[in-house]
Length: 344
Ligand code: NAD
Ligand code: WQD
Image (cartoon, rainbow, N blue to C red; front, side, top):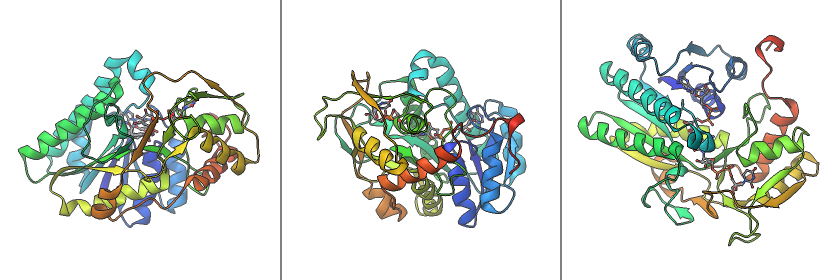
């Protein structure tokens, strides 16, 4: 399939573009490089063994999106593009609502106008933020505690309504748990622009010496070691989940949600220990207050994806730490800046 991949230069998108090529599909990246680097696209091309088509555009530009869709001859769209920092979304809600909602509306309008009816959307376990259960099936009650999460909930609702209005749509709402790790080559990985908000990039930057120590947010949760428990899914498994969803969608008209997680929980301290083993370095940490809005434990029930998408995660925490460390140690400052960049 020829697949328009919005946000395809980003962390999850770049790994998925590679998985699409490896599965015999033809991805086309659309990105404005707001939170990514053209170097990621060059490296994906290098790993794929062929040039990946790239369109530099902003999804907020409705006319450009319409033109791209009219000319692209796409069979499907995978929609990763958007803003994703929870804390920033509390500080700048309008930026988040505008970017995430208007981008998606422009994309849906263009798909509707030009007869593209297959969509895979990046949702998030953040939609289970108020469910009050630690292991989530897709059917638990949805709710969220921040504007970023609200954009995911609203978009899911919009997708449901669009699918009801026209039965020719096939839409996958993929709810990712905690994506981590990197491609085993060490060539592509997560490259946060500022101080990382998420656990895994912070731990790897401490290991590589970019940050002094990790603050562990809460040591008194009702979990085995008192620290938060999450379902950490290797980004290469997550990428494979998108290929599985794309290939299963013809059998699933309408809009349907699937959890992409491992079904296993690991604590913050287990992540620290795994990274210490992988890097051979000590990771200094200090237990501090809980972070507002965090829950003790959030783990996927991934049974629906196993049954209906024929997909399951193959990699565990040791693989995550090994591959995450390879990426971080080979690229201590992330992708090189445009002007200092090595030739790929
Ligand atoms: P990312 O920031 O690495 O990738 C997003 C990409 O979208 C970037 O390349 C960015 O430049 C691009 N982009 C942003 N706004 C754009 C616009 N207006 N027009 C064109 N391109 C634009 O993020 P990621 O971690 O790869 O996440 C991808 C998707 O998955 C996002 O929708 C995110 O909300 C969702 N998600 C991420 C996580 C996570 O922890 N990483 C968890 C659950 C869901
Ligand atoms: C994991 C655990 C923290 C940083 C977020 C979003 C969610 C989804 C995935 C996009 C928690 C602890 C963290 C640190 C720590 N993203 N922690 N010190 O909060 O589960 O999920 O990313 O959709 O929407 O909310 O991930 O990596 O931030 O935290 O102790 O410096 O690590 O308290 O227990 P989270 P995370």
